[in-house]
Amino acid sequence: MASKVYFTDFCTGGRETLPQKLARLCLSAGMDQIDFEGKFVAIKIHFGELGNLAFLRPNYARVVVDLVKDMGGKPFLTDANTMYVGSRKNALDHLDTAYQNGFSPFSTGCHVIIADGLKGTDDVAVPVEGAEYCPTAMIGRAVMDADIVISLNHFKGHEEAGFGGALKNLGMGCGSNEGKRDMHSDGRPLIDAEKCVGCGECARNCAHDGPQMQDSGVMKINWQNCMGCGRCVDVCPVKAIYHDNHEATKVLNFKIAEYAKAVVQGRPNFHINMVLDVSPYCDCHSDNDLPIVPNVGMFASFDPVALDLACAEAVNAQPVIPGSKLDKSERKGIDDNLTADFPHTDWRTQISHGKKIGLGEDSYELIRV
Image (cartoon, rainbow, N blue to C red; front, side):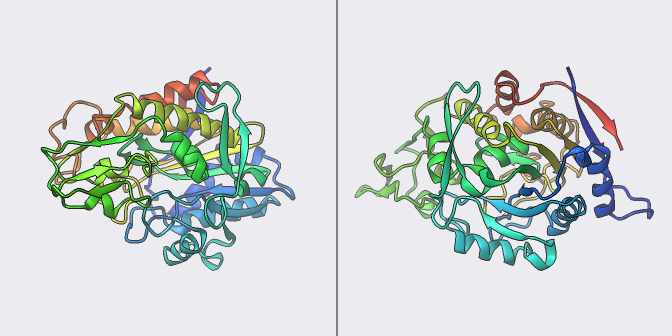
């Protein structure tokens, strides 16, 4: 059966504000059908890397927090620590980043809890029903301690997964440090010595001393240190780094879907995708780029798979913004903006595997609010 996905655009006509419109969307989609009374509610969100300005405004989080409170729930905003160099690698820096980006208790109406603790090691081993790759997922404890999960997601392009939406925010975003290593474990990077210019950008973005400079002036990956996150592949300016396993990105997407299922299975969950400022890269980068397509709207559903599919197809139906990364791509005009953004990965694998393992449906009824 097709799942119901609710949609509204960003037009207000002067009759209501965008926060009011988001609240109306959530209630129209049935969020109030959940029994929130006295329940702890994890609102999974991406706080944005310092320097990045494409992440969701805290005002949108405030809408969801207030709805949960109005229905008797006890909400908190949460995200897990990252594996790479940046401002969210441990809970203290992560909290500083969240506050600097506007996600304080004063602006959002609730506290921020880093899901996997100080160093990313506070996790829970969660059996995943129907999993083919990750029979046990390592999920941040704070997320698993919650009674209800809501994901509030910035939908955008992603250099490894093809797109970042509800599945990515739930799966990769809730995985602990061990969980992230698990999801990335099927691909290790190699460096083409003939292309490498020894700029060291890969080393500057690695938190584990994987890329190392050789006497020849060319980088080499120390696989004993490498966690397989793929960050070096993405940041190499001359495309000298590649995965040793051509199936790595496909398996990564499979694992993201399985980790997402670990987060939501067996308890009430609800999902919201904001398709605006559709940057070509993840909000994990310390900068962002010109959006690749115009703003589309807000989407909500109880089904994260159908929700992501609806958003992906909506993005693919948009014209390309002139001057954007996608406008400059050799693949522009192939009728699939997400594939043109990153041709080496297939975003559909998240959807197909999510359907296969019973996380959601790969068809939807779009209901305009």
